[in-house]
Image 1 (cartoon, helix red, strand yellow):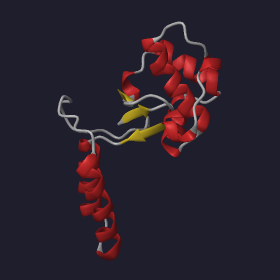
Image 2: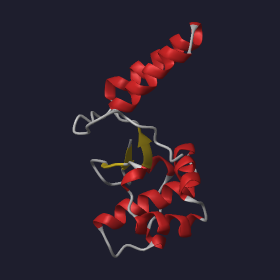
Image 3: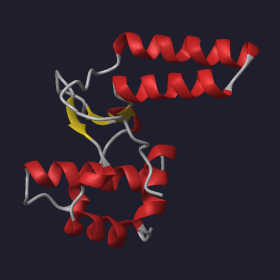
Length: 136
């Protein structure tokens, strides 16, 4: 999964590989303090579109690139930040759909997934099987 940030006036979006397992202890604890959520709950809220959770994720990645940035400096319009599944994650969802859905539900889901696969960011540098984007 990728966090994609394209603020107004920036020609190309900034894209960070988001894998909650790759956030270090200091980052996880800072996220918990800022959001008031435990880490597992936070990972779910990021996916569900919680604004504070996404702000904390954006802050974490921006801080890696700009260590002096402050929480108060991180503000964004809703359409400037989005999460995108990688190609391997879409393929995993496709496999799950084929195994678990039938009929019209399967057809609609496959159509949506196949459309997303056309433009999905290829994460071929990653090795191994795609994993779920939520801490359990």
